[in-house]
Length: 123
Image 1 (cartoon, rainbow, N blue to C red):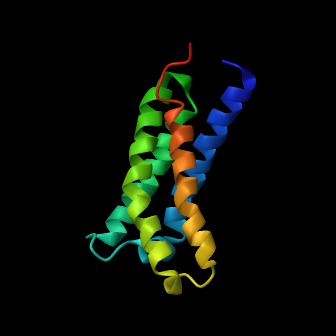
Image 2 (image 1 turned 180 degrees about the horizontal axis):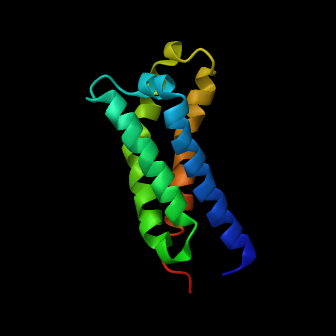
């Protein structure tokens, strides 16, 4: 595997791990992101944080990259409603510009595509 490709895989893994850790450091922020129609906000915040840490960590190892890639794609789909909720309710997030909240939506697609790159064995 070329060094640049490996570096990108490590970068994505570390980004997800950092985001996951953030779920435990700034739990109230992530609870505020949760759409009201979802139950058990605290549990879902902790579960998604643990999944980001775990899957990001697995992505660091080529042996587990396919599993981690698919898991990160699925996780990105699962958390998308929270990002939509943020964009639809910018008054709940005054620290962010409304345009920035909308920009996050296509950026999540970029992250999903990046994770999808690791759903196949290199070869």
